[in-house]
Length: 237
Image (cartoon, rainbow, N blue to C red; front, side, top):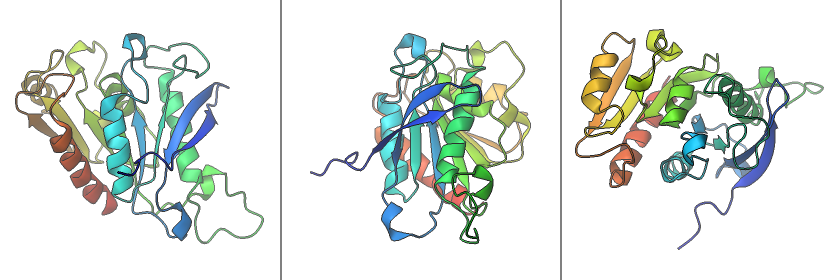
């Protein structure tokens, strides 16, 4: 059996406040020269509770999106497993997400870029390629809080919304599609509470996973299916 991560490119990305982050990019179609159907950025669970970009849910999404023809980047939040800086409580981490968005969009520049343009400039990135922003647990909360013009939609897995005292995240009031996948017996915010807390959110769909807790130990196939379905939504965005 081939290793799905054998083509992973390891790289360093940098935030606007000067923090260097460890990241990995998987782009199975990089050699064919064609624009991808979508791009994806993944955000891992809470770093103070052992979360890294190699978490099992993030790894599953990493391979799922790449198999669907979606170049995908994952990274370690600041202060986590070799990334510089210190934990920012979910606020400074938004800058980490933006750095990842800018990095992957810079890899897919417009075919109309003229000689002399800088292909690493995010402003030169092909605006026709949609981008989905995904996260699990803490990473889902951070992802939902990021406002970036390149984001076409949010895919949030098990966000602990009941533990948030602040105002609803940015995605709550945005018209771009949001899908939230949560277990019905999630330890922090079960799917029924997610439905209640998001009933006034714009363009939001909640997908319950029966019998699953926060760690989604037996939900791999269902999670993969829902992620693939969201790619189809974003690819038409």
